[in-house]
Length: 272
Image (cartoon, rainbow, N blue to C red; front, side):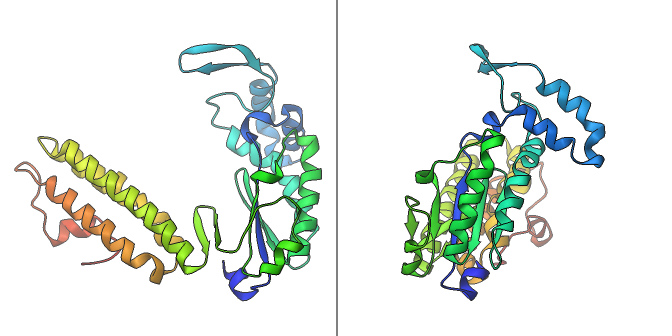
C-alpha cells in the first residue's frame, strides 16, 4: 500500500497458484528440502510421508483414486513444504525486478513495482513454476494500479482494476473500495457476534463469555492491525457495540458482574 501511495504509477499483481497444496511435484519438494543443511534432519520424515501414494477422502468416504502429488490430507507439515516448493520461484521473480518487490502469503503471491517490471517478473514466475508442477491461470490473477496507463504494460489477459485490490486480506485502493470492503467484513462480523449471543444467552453465560473473549473479539483484529485508523475506526465502534451487547448477555448470577475492569479484559479496539 505504501509503495503504491509513494509511486502512483506502480502496479500490484496478484498471482494465485491453482490448487497449489494438492498439485506440487513431491520429488521437487524433497529435492528443495535437501538443499538446506538445517532441514536435512526432517528429510527422512517428509520422504516417508510423501514417497507413497496417499488415499483421498471426502468426509468418511474414500475416493476411488489416490493422490500422487501435493500433500497428504491432514498433514500439518504441508504448509511449510509448500512454501519451500515456491521459494525458488519467488527468488527468480524477485531477481527479475530492480525497483519492485514480491511478497507471498502461502499460495497468493504479489508482485509490486513499475508495470513493465511487474510484467517481466510475472513471466519469470510462470516459467519457474513448470518444474514444481504448479500452474496459474492468467484470468484468475488480479492487478491494480492508480494509473490507468499501467494496464497497457501489464501481462495481457490479467484483469486490471483501478478501484482497488485485496492483498493478504487487506483492501488497497480508493477510499470507496476500502470502505465497501470493510463495510462487508463488519456486517459479517457483527452478524456472527449477534447470532452467537442469541444462541447462548439463555443458560450458557460462561460459554458465551469465553467465546466473546477468545473467539469473537479477535475476529476484526487483522483489519485493525493492517488498515489505517481513519478507515477502520468507525467500523471498530460497531464491533465494540456488538461485543459489549454480547458480554452483557453473558452476565448471569454465577459470572462476575461486568464492570470497567472486566470490560478492559475484552481489549476492545475503540474505547467507549
